[in-house]
Image (cartoon, rainbow, N blue to C red):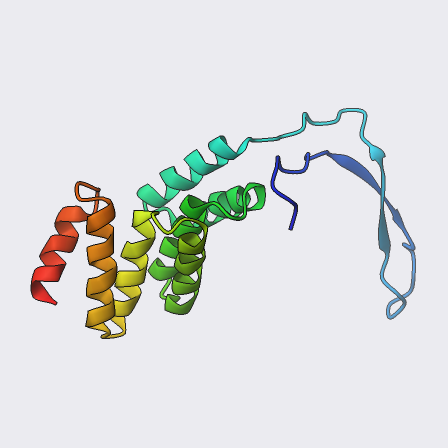
Length: 162
């Protein structure tokens, strides 16, 4: 994993194939990268804020494949971002990967214990495992941190039934 910072530049290169012409069963041809092509593509470097915006947009739209790609790129740029970790936890939860979702949400909370949205993931995983007391605690923590947050009314309704 690259350290925090911009993503590595993407450069188009030409390749030379060596070892061709072998009989069947011989070692396969090898590909050796050559110098950058003369018609080199412009490097694509996005800053963290742009990557995070793509990650947020894709998760908000429920486009889980695109979200995973965008959020993974954002995580490479800033591995300890609680927002990115929580978005990745949401993706894992929607893929039925409760353990991964809990691990990612816990990492988000380790980075920032006041990051309210991570408590929604924790509560959802706990509720799904019939650990209602733990789910209640997570949902209440969200409501304490974000009483008017985007999940507040839904969580109040859920708490009324737990």
